Length: 243
Image 1 (spheres, rainbow, N blue to C red):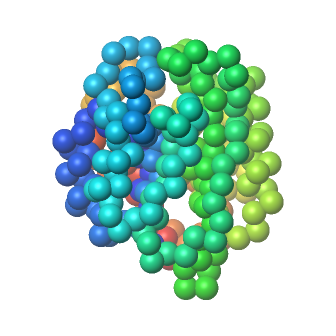
Image 2: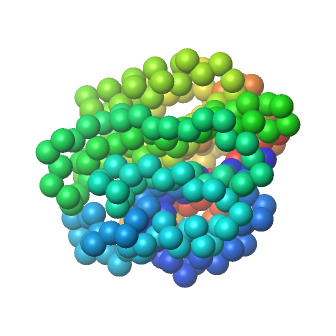
């Protein structure tokens, strides 16, 4: 089984992204995406960006053998999504708020955040996969009370899962924060284990080169993990192969 986690940057680097997905459509079973637009009027950003405002439709066309599970956080126009090959049995799927911003005005980073989860069965084995796009504050990726609370919610949610589990996404956290250390309890942080130095592409000019993570429970048999050096976003794709 192969899984890719990737913050799509709203499809801003669409040409390379399109090529990348066409190359991996047949050999990747599960895609966990962040920053998906769905028929959006404009980009949900503080700065002008050339986003793909119908990115969800683009992804469905590029990944015709995968079923899309889209979970928006801003009306129905922006959120996260998991694409699963149609021959994989999805037993359950859902979402949970991990940060609420009821007064959000429509632009910038402090909107409501959610986690998305699916439970799949493959060859008689059940796995839980959780996709997250964590809180962005515009003031770095260190601990804040809101991020601590967010990690507490994620940890509590995952603590009731008894089957092998995978937690991935863009957490907007540095590796040595307490917020990240909380998530590492009973989980293996593959970014740390493999000594990864950056999860950002050359499109990202700031100094903090960490944001994206894949964590697995000890009963997930990891065959391969790597950060793919494909500049399809300001984030790099994370590839997990597990048995």
